[in-house]
Amino acid sequence: DQQVKQNSPSLSVQEGRISILNCDYTNSMFDYFLWYKKYPAEGPTFLISISSIKDKNEDGRFTVFLNKSAKHLSLHIVPSQPGDSAVYFCAASVSTSGTYKYIFGTGTRLKVLA
Amino acid sequence: DVKVTQSSRYLVKRTGEKVFLECVQDMDHENMFWYRQDPGLGLRLIYFSYDVKMKEKGDIPEGYSVSREKKERFSLILESASTNQTSMYLCASSFTVQNTGELFFGEGSRLTVL
Image (cartoon, rainbow over all chains, first blue to last red; front, side, top):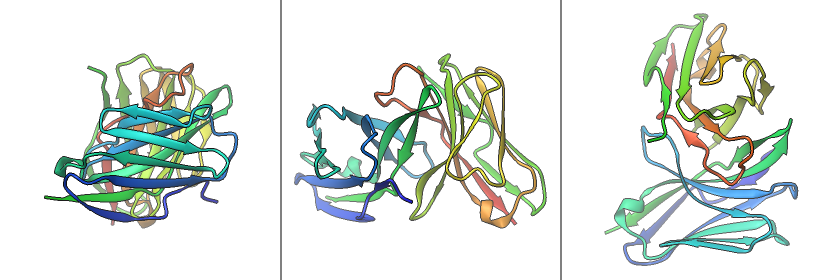
């Protein structure tokens, strides 16, 4: 039962254009949503997050949008750069056992073409 | 600089061997997590711990156990390694009171079971 889904395994975008990565979830109890970026042979690094009570959060070239009614979030990267080529994971946090755990999606491999 | 250190980057073990994967964090985080990453499956939670000597099963605990004797150290144990446990293993940590993201990951341990 995949609670966090990334239906596009890969995406290619021209340098300078917008990259849009999508994520769907099923659990309405998730209270924070996060995006992580992962290069090969490295651990994931935190990119940006959004609270479930907001619909947009922006940090430089990265913006995350949350549509609660559709249980959908997206990450926009503008403008895309070759260094953005990586695997992007969507994640959600949920309260459990007095703390929080994080559920990750399957990832989308972004390739930014120079 | 915050740091999560995994003891081995690459391991090769034989079927039936006992395997220890060690993880140490220097941020005084209460929570620690073990994930495995497999192509097409994303990051799946194996076990997590919210305090010393406390542990909770994640989504795929079968075949694994954990140990948290000290706050900074979280070990993943494969009692009898099998070929389907060949994977990238990722350790992470976070504060309990903060669920805004910022799961800090180690660089990963790639385990091959022959």
